[in-house]
Image 1: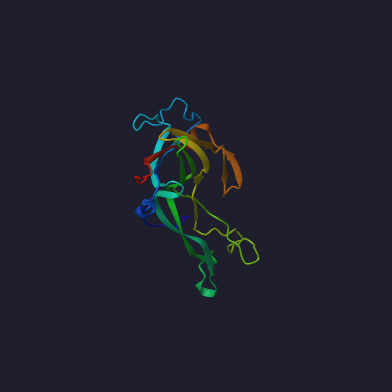
Image 2: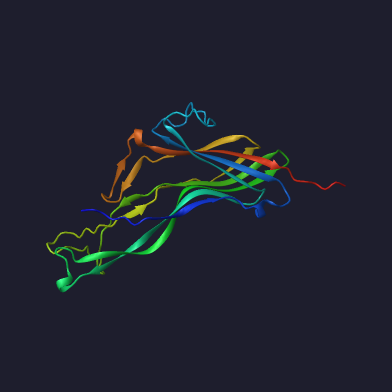
Length: 241
């Protein structure tokens, strides 16, 4: 049986801290985040994470995001595609002569919602003039293209619906699931020095259709690392006197 998927693309969004946010007294700080996706179990051992064209095959540079904001103020950046999809489905039941053979119902998608797919950074840097360091509260995240899973249809009493011949009803609709990696941390960085965080791997994945957890083969494991740098762009201006 052919399946149907409802997923609309609304547009492409690029967002960063606005000019009004950074035109303030005090130092401006640029936060740079490089997103690296690593396949397999090798990790980043021996990898030059700052290289732009010499990365090994198992390391993919997904994106580089930059946020410029005032010390002590949150800044955000994203590159994302906006998708719309239904969260719920309504079953319409046939009766009498209008009922197709073997099919008691059809599906109507409802309650459409928006999901952004891409890379995102929320960062709050705070400059410490005493030792020229930057305290950084940062949350980089990645939302990937959806995987699709069917789901069971039940009646008002919670019983699975069946066809005329007693088989469980399988309607041709699937629901998207968006794999998401999100990492929040607080760092103390030297001005202009890179650091690497992340590296959490998914050793097991959960199959919604089979209701079981399966170990991910080493060659298919995915892990995200974030190469982070914070730099003072413009020191605070002091009035002459």
